[in-house]
Image 1 (cartoon, rainbow, N blue to C red):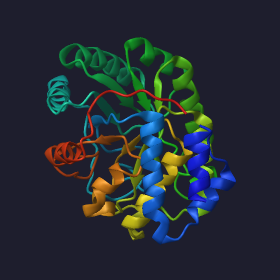
Image 2: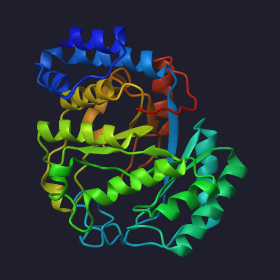
Image 3: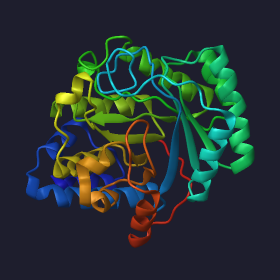
Image 4: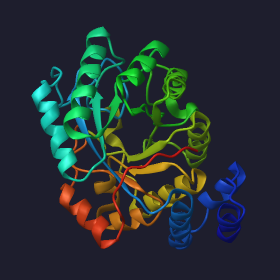
Length: 328
């Protein structure tokens, strides 16, 4: 099965079918290193050797009216994360400068909101211009559900990439979120691409979904045609409904990193939240299993490892850092 997948992706340069991906998802644990090796070859052949480094900033934390069951920023749950106002301009610019000094090329401002109101839109437009002018970084934004008009306005303001995750499959979505629909997320993804921004659309694995639902999610990610796909693994947060879940195991994480690369050969596949507790000492293996981008530093409400550890890892693997753009 792995040999056939190699021939399809490397010799014939075609995407794998759903049935082919299902076969690969079922290989024995002993075959996962071979699966990972193929994913690395595919990443180099389809996306090249460059690794994109990004810093993210929670510019507006907590108090979100949505009930995403994995998220400690939801106002629906009793967690340690409390609502705070939008950060001052100086704080945002300082964080962006620190990101630039790491050699990163992308800086993402993330807001815990259902979607941006007029005041928030004005702040995002202002900050996009300031960050871009002062650091030269590409500016990305994650601010929830957009209207078509808002997508075009952000694009006009110079937002390079917009993040809006599907998180999980349509068939499992209702088990995780009840305050908005899967279709609202899909619509926002469509508006982002229509407006000319690059679409960053990620997944969160380990919420109780089945293998079949993960394969369904791959097809639904393909359908929205992202430039970038962040791979998140659930880090169960106290006070949320999903605090009862156990983290994904390291070998399972490697299997699914590889499968997402084999399913999406040309995308920017980014290490994101949860990798530290899931992969532990195997994070370098993830970089040779299809990953070609990573978030450095802390996440929105959880701590990552030090940026220098990630930069040292990339240096050890002789992976060059640079800016990427890709599409399915």
